[in-house]
Image 1 (cartoon, helix red, strand yellow):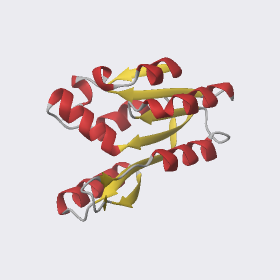
Image 2 (tube, rainbow, N blue to C red; image 1 turned 90 degrees about the vertical axis):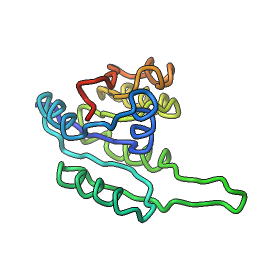
Image 3 (spheres, rainbow, N blue to C red; image 1 turned 30 degrees about the horizontal axis):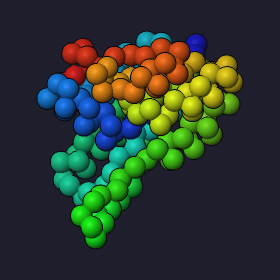
Image 4 (tube, helix red, strand yellow; image 1 turned 180 degrees about the vertical axis):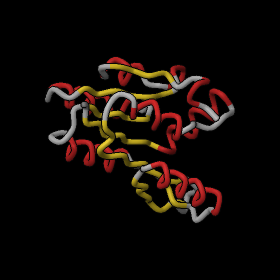
Length: 156
């Protein structure tokens, strides 16, 4: 049985499914689908904390599904721009997990992860990604063993 680790870039999935479909991603359905392929030994969801009650309710729901929710504070800069990025944190966690799993599943269409997915495969790990096809980086899609398009069956 495959040992599987899931890494969910919550902001990326939220905004891409909203833009492409006007709908939200179904994390429970994803969990069921992945569970059919092996044992989920680790699952982390990376999000931005805005002290929003609706977001907190969603984060609790993720925890009930089985995700370890990791939060970073939302940073509003003086020039009006905002910062809220988990790319380095996700990368470190994936690197730390590589020796413990057979499959790494990334929920993100962000091309910044393409080299990381190639690195995982060079270590004999199956690297897969879930993303919205029209909004996922071509380089990420090409870098993984398997790209799973987020479509109607994984939406609420």
